[in-house]
Length: 108
Length: 120
Image 1 (cartoon, rainbow over the protein chains, first blue to last red):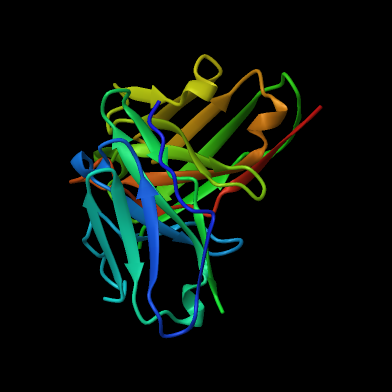
Image 2: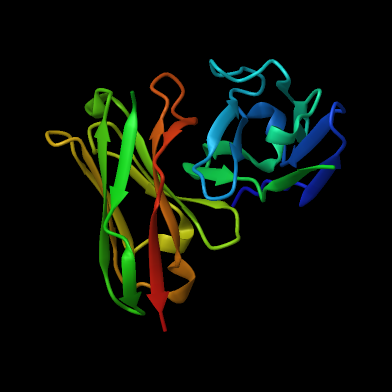
């Protein structure tokens, strides 16, 4: 089955840039989506189709995808960005949806 | 406003059964694929099942194949998950979620979840 690997944690100072990677075999050929989840809450979509943002999501959130790695970038990090972040793809070969292992972003 | 409200969670013994429901509102339910996604306490998100808009096509994670069945009632805007032969590792919050209409690989709205606890 298809596996998506993320770093368990990323720490960043306010105002700096956080980069969260999502590794998968030839992930560049897939459409990658990113979700933010705060404690006790449902996930919220922050980036879809590699690099598009839903309405209401700040421009500080951006994404890229190439080769074996997709990346979510959070610019000018704020305290409110502290959360768990998950990447997700659809594996067409198995018709299954796959989430990454998740990354906890801590704002120092 | 899109709303997804799960119900049916609770405490069940190992080997038992439970049926989860998800009441949808604020959109044309019959046009959208739907999912169940779960999250064990302190763990990450895990996709469970998906059903097409008309219910003719379903897909399940390997971990629940043969035990869980996803279904829907478009007349009553409700999604279901029938869970049989429950195991301790099925303990989790179960989220009902909607797939985007134009990009079915994407989950665009989530419910708040219902907790299922399987006791041994």
